[in-house]
Image 1: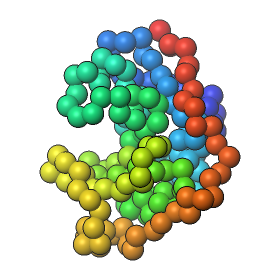
Image 2: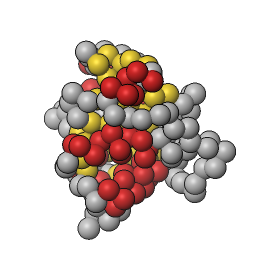
Image 3: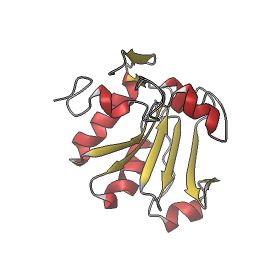
Amino acid sequence: MGNLSEHFDSNMFVCNCGQCRQEVKISLTLVGVLEDVWVKFNQPLAIKRAFVCDNIELEEPGPKRNYHGIGKAVDFGAAEEKFLPEIFRYLETFPEITGLGYDPDRKYIHIDLREKEPSKWLYQHGGEKELTPELRARYGLGADVTADRGKKSVSLDMPLEIPSVA
Protein backbone atom coordinates (compact mmCIF):
# COMPACT_ATOMS: atom_id res chain seq x y z
CA MET A 1 0.00 0.00 0.00
CA GLY A 2 1.49 3.32 -1.09
CA ASN A 3 1.49 6.64 0.66
CA LEU A 4 -0.01 8.49 -2.35
CA SER A 5 -2.49 5.87 -3.54
CA GLU A 6 -3.07 2.14 -3.33
CA HIS A 7 -0.15 1.30 -5.64
CA PHE A 8 2.08 4.39 -5.61
CA ASP A 9 4.60 5.71 -3.09
CA SER A 10 6.23 9.13 -3.27
CA ASN A 11 9.64 7.43 -3.64
CA MET A 12 8.54 6.17 -7.09
CA PHE A 13 8.48 9.79 -8.31
CA VAL A 14 11.73 11.16 -6.84
CA CYS A 15 14.46 12.73 -8.93
CA ASN A 16 17.17 10.13 -9.35
CA CYS A 17 19.99 12.34 -10.60
CA GLY A 18 22.19 11.47 -7.64
CA GLN A 19 23.07 15.15 -7.16
CA CYS A 20 20.02 16.49 -5.34
CA ARG A 21 18.48 15.37 -2.08
CA GLN A 22 16.06 13.07 -3.87
CA GLU A 23 13.58 15.85 -4.37
CA VAL A 24 10.07 15.00 -5.46
CA LYS A 25 7.14 16.96 -6.79
CA ILE A 26 4.16 15.21 -8.36
CA SER A 27 0.63 16.19 -9.31
CA LEU A 28 -1.94 14.07 -7.52
CA THR A 29 -3.98 14.21 -10.72
CA LEU A 30 -1.26 12.15 -12.42
CA VAL A 31 -1.13 9.73 -9.51
CA GLY A 32 -4.91 9.30 -9.76
CA VAL A 33 -4.75 8.65 -13.51
CA LEU A 34 -1.93 6.11 -13.05
CA GLU A 35 -3.86 4.37 -10.27
CA ASP A 36 -6.90 4.17 -12.54
CA VAL A 37 -4.81 2.61 -15.34
CA TRP A 38 -3.21 0.08 -12.96
CA VAL A 39 -6.61 -1.07 -11.69
CA LYS A 40 -8.42 -1.06 -15.07
CA PHE A 41 -5.74 -3.10 -16.84
CA ASN A 42 -4.62 -5.08 -13.78
CA GLN A 43 -1.10 -4.09 -14.81
CA PRO A 44 1.67 -3.02 -12.47
CA LEU A 45 3.14 0.20 -13.84
CA ALA A 46 6.84 1.05 -13.66
CA ILE A 47 7.62 4.75 -13.35
CA LYS A 48 10.55 5.39 -15.68
CA ARG A 49 10.80 9.15 -15.21
CA ALA A 50 8.81 11.59 -13.12
CA PHE A 51 10.12 14.69 -11.37
CA VAL A 52 13.52 16.01 -12.42
CA CYS A 53 15.34 18.66 -10.40
CA ASP A 54 17.02 21.77 -11.75
CA ASN A 55 20.36 19.92 -11.99
CA ILE A 56 18.95 17.59 -14.62
CA GLU A 57 16.98 20.22 -16.50
CA LEU A 58 20.04 22.43 -16.94
CA GLU A 59 22.07 19.52 -18.37
CA GLU A 60 19.46 18.16 -20.76
CA PRO A 61 18.78 19.54 -24.23
CA GLY A 62 15.32 20.90 -24.90
CA PRO A 63 12.99 23.26 -23.06
CA LYS A 64 13.86 24.32 -19.56
CA ARG A 65 11.19 24.10 -16.87
CA ASN A 66 9.52 21.29 -18.75
CA TYR A 67 6.59 19.45 -17.24
CA HIS A 68 8.81 16.88 -15.51
CA GLY A 69 10.53 19.78 -13.73
CA ILE A 70 7.30 21.06 -12.20
CA GLY A 71 5.80 17.71 -11.23
CA LYS A 72 3.26 17.57 -14.06
CA ALA A 73 4.70 14.77 -16.23
CA VAL A 74 5.38 11.04 -15.89
CA ASP A 75 6.87 8.41 -18.20
CA PHE A 76 5.86 4.86 -17.39
CA GLY A 77 5.82 1.31 -18.71
CA ALA A 78 3.55 -1.65 -18.02
CA ALA A 79 4.48 -5.09 -16.70
CA GLU A 80 3.10 -6.58 -19.93
CA GLU A 81 4.23 -4.31 -22.75
CA LYS A 82 1.54 -5.65 -25.11
CA PHE A 83 -0.99 -3.53 -23.18
CA LEU A 84 0.71 -0.20 -23.95
CA PRO A 85 -1.25 0.60 -27.15
CA GLU A 86 -4.53 -0.12 -25.36
CA ILE A 87 -3.42 1.95 -22.34
CA PHE A 88 -2.50 4.81 -24.69
CA ARG A 89 -5.99 4.71 -26.22
CA TYR A 90 -7.57 4.66 -22.76
CA LEU A 91 -5.50 7.66 -21.68
CA GLU A 92 -6.80 9.62 -24.67
CA THR A 93 -10.22 9.69 -22.95
CA PHE A 94 -8.94 11.58 -19.88
CA PRO A 95 -9.60 15.32 -20.27
CA GLU A 96 -6.86 16.05 -17.72
CA ILE A 97 -4.15 14.44 -19.88
CA THR A 98 -3.23 17.15 -22.36
CA GLY A 99 0.19 15.80 -23.38
CA LEU A 100 0.37 12.17 -24.49
CA GLY A 101 3.30 10.44 -26.15
CA TYR A 102 4.16 6.82 -26.94
CA ASP A 103 7.58 5.26 -27.50
CA PRO A 104 7.08 1.84 -29.11
CA ASP A 105 10.82 1.10 -29.15
CA ARG A 106 11.62 1.87 -25.51
CA LYS A 107 8.15 0.70 -24.42
CA TYR A 108 6.83 3.64 -22.44
CA ILE A 109 4.06 6.24 -22.42
CA HIS A 110 4.50 9.90 -21.47
CA ILE A 111 1.59 11.81 -19.90
CA ASP A 112 1.51 15.44 -18.81
CA LEU A 113 -0.80 18.21 -17.70
CA ARG A 114 0.25 20.98 -20.10
CA GLU A 115 -1.70 24.21 -20.07
CA LYS A 116 -1.21 24.62 -23.83
CA GLU A 117 -3.21 23.05 -26.64
CA PRO A 118 -3.48 19.26 -26.18
CA SER A 119 -0.85 17.30 -28.07
CA LYS A 120 -0.25 13.65 -29.00
CA TRP A 121 2.92 12.25 -30.52
CA LEU A 122 5.04 9.20 -31.16
CA TYR A 123 8.72 9.02 -30.27
CA GLN A 124 10.75 7.83 -33.27
CA HIS A 125 14.47 7.93 -34.00
CA GLY A 126 15.18 10.14 -30.97
CA GLY A 127 12.52 12.73 -31.78
CA GLU A 128 8.83 13.42 -31.52
CA LYS A 129 6.61 12.85 -34.57
CA GLU A 130 3.06 14.11 -34.84
CA LEU A 131 0.70 11.19 -34.38
CA THR A 132 -0.75 10.73 -37.88
CA PRO A 133 -3.40 8.17 -38.87
CA GLU A 134 -0.62 6.19 -40.60
CA LEU A 135 1.50 6.02 -37.44
CA ARG A 136 -1.57 5.17 -35.35
CA ALA A 137 -2.30 2.23 -37.68
CA ARG A 138 1.33 1.05 -37.76
CA TYR A 139 1.55 0.87 -33.95
CA GLY A 140 -1.94 -0.46 -33.23
CA LEU A 141 -3.32 2.77 -31.75
CA GLY A 142 -6.59 2.72 -33.72
CA ALA A 143 -8.56 5.81 -34.65
CA ASP A 144 -7.97 9.11 -32.90
CA VAL A 145 -9.89 9.52 -29.64
CA THR A 146 -10.75 13.02 -28.49
CA ALA A 147 -11.48 13.60 -24.82
CA ASP A 148 -14.30 15.92 -23.82
CA ARG A 149 -12.24 18.78 -22.43
CA GLY A 150 -15.39 20.40 -21.05
CA LYS A 151 -15.82 17.60 -18.51
CA LYS A 152 -12.93 17.84 -16.09
CA SER A 153 -13.03 15.53 -13.14
CA VAL A 154 -12.33 16.80 -9.66
CA SER A 155 -8.56 16.87 -9.39
CA LEU A 156 -5.66 18.46 -7.58
CA ASP A 157 -3.70 20.34 -10.20
CA MET A 158 -1.09 21.67 -7.78
CA PRO A 159 1.99 19.46 -7.56
CA LEU A 160 2.51 17.85 -4.19
CA GLU A 161 5.90 18.67 -2.69
CA ILE A 162 7.15 15.98 -0.39
CA PRO A 163 10.07 16.50 1.99
CA SER A 164 13.37 14.99 0.86
CA VAL A 165 13.92 11.35 1.73
CA ALA A 166 17.61 11.77 2.59
